[in-house]
Length: 66
Image 1: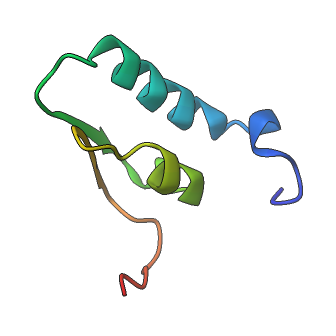
Image 2: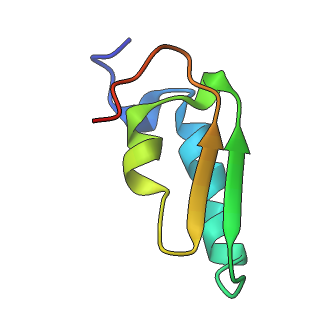
């Protein structure tokens, strides 16, 4: 599955929903995206956060934070 482009994967829905929220709520002082471990994918961690957009997620596996 990892060899398929992200755009062709079902997990792309998590990125699409978060990016849509960023657009719709762009005037909000703060947006927190909450998700379950199913959306624990690296592209979402890399693309979604912004100065006024944060992620709070339950991890699917242990992650090195340093």
